[in-house]
Image 1 (cartoon, one colour):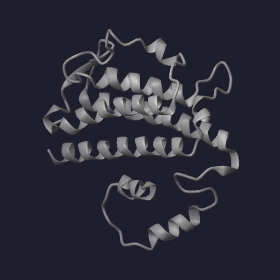
Image 2 (image 1 turned 30 degrees about the vertical axis):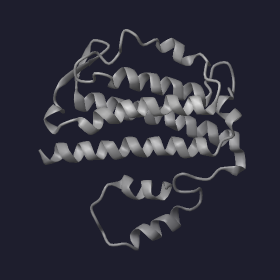
Image 3 (image 1 turned 90 degrees about the vertical axis):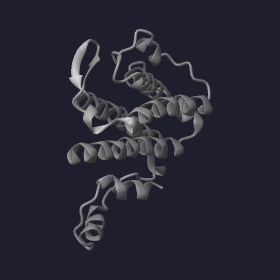
Amino acid sequence: MEINSNYLESIKKQFLYYKTIAEKTMEQLETEQLFEIANENSNSIATIIKHMSGNMISRWTNFLTTDGEKKWRNRDSEFIETIESKESLLTIWEKGWNCLFAVINDLKSEELMTIIYIRNEGQTVVEAINRQLSHYPYHIGQIVFYAKMLKKTEWNSLSIPKNKSSNYNVDKFSKEKSIKNFNDAELNKLK
């Protein structure tokens, strides 16, 4: 059972880490930059956020008891620009994450091998979580990449800054070996 508890704690920290990375990215942007579109085949950061929130609300609502692709979800509409303010965008963002964390925080170790369905395809709770833990960082990576393009040289790094790996490693190796979650230190850096 200990591995299941460790897994649940780890995924909570990983979801929080990626949420924080995206929020620290958005903080660096002017409001209008959140809505910029590079070309007709790309999405604005606002649209990516709208899609992520729609996915989260669909996947995590009644997580253990209903299919993760809800009949009321209109995925295609998530890619139509309808958000008009940063405040509305952040409200949508929080709504999705609140739905996710409400489920993750209540999950029990013994539920991890329960079969749930997404688009009528059965998978364990662990597999469904891992699926989302790869989906959301994929989009957060898009958000960060696009934000860096928009900011150009004014970017404040959210990870190891370019050409600073040696300094980072010197600091890490100057400390005693310890067992801890990678995200503990990273989340502290992002505060």
